[in-house]
Image (cartoon, rainbow, N blue to C red; front, side):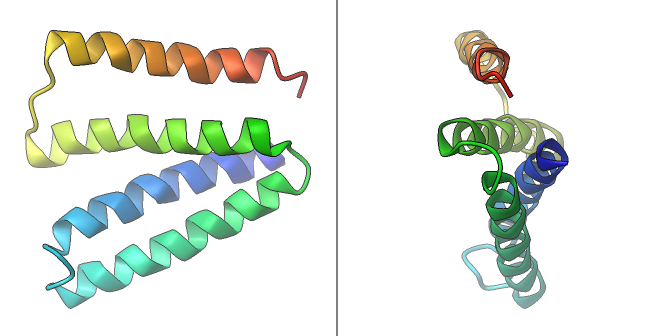
Length: 106
């Protein structure tokens, strides 16, 4: 169950980061509220996952899922261009997340 909590936490991180961008510096109330709600939900599920998963596993995977998801959100929602070199580092990020999980013993 802790892996589901961690996945939910990572997805919520993407949501709050996206809403933060859409809030235009917290000048749009609805997106500002969604940002704060997303942060609270994301941290809540990270805390739940961290009860049974080691911090050295939960936190990097949470941030990695958030980083990867934010890259996708930026490309899809905001039409951000990603250079070839950046794609190489995105692949490294994914390899790192998978490697952390694979070598954790959990």
